[in-house]
Length: 267
Ligand SMILES: C[S@@+](CC[C@H](N)C(=O)[O-])C[C@H]1O[C@@H](n2cnc3c(N)ncnc32)[C@H](O)[C@@H]1O
Image 1 (spheres, rainbow, N blue to C red):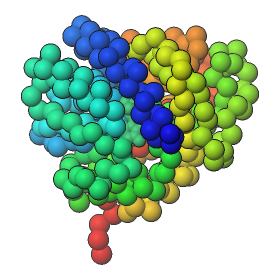
Image 2 (image 1 turned 180 degrees about the vertical axis):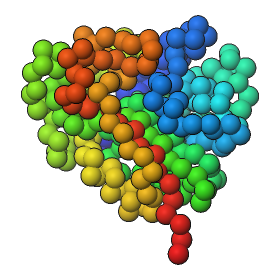
Image 3 (image 1 turned 90 degrees about the vertical axis):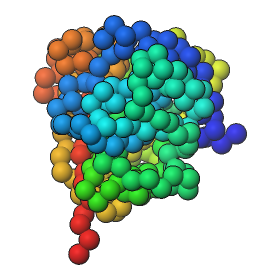
């Protein structure tokens, strides 16, 4: 089995648990887009959005409350089955979903959108950012923009189990080319599932930016944050921001980043 197929099987083990977890959290209002995303996206009313790597659609539903229409894309069929169920549960009628590997989406889908959105745990699952960036360019209207919020690669290099003790041990080489292989998945909205093989690629900041620039996009905004969108070990959750924090890390290292990019106009 190749790496992408193996990742797909691993993610499918979480689909039902994620559906149940996020259905409850959306219904009681405890799951929200984090405050940086809300601020940086701005007013998206009436806009068409494509949400890449949408999982079981929890954030797709939140985006749909603000936008005109949202199309979620994920490569796990079970995720999309539950995403449609979630839409039904929440009476959300301005969403639809496409089953596809992001890196082959341009072979089967040619619609254009005002916004391409992706967030919180996405880049590492993709082995090729040049194809990813060209796919994003192909999905955008000339007036559209791309938005991403994800883990900062500098933070991803450290052994996350030691960061709460302020031990900065490089476990995953920042410039490493081979994927990190793990034998479990989940744990943030489900139990951790064992008996899988997952492959997670490190992408440096320069790779991310150069991939987008090479595809004809320019950076409108780039931010780095000391907060994390997941608890990487003994972090404190801030209700206000919807993010996890270490008290000691007000100025030491970035844990997440966001980037907004537009299309370079044709000459
Ligand atoms: C951490 S989740 C992202 C969840 C995201 N925060 C959300 O709910 O919008 C990562 C998602 O990427 C999807 N994924 C991983 N590799 C993919 C690929 N090559 N093509 C499409 N989806 C992929 C997985 O199925 C999973 O749903």
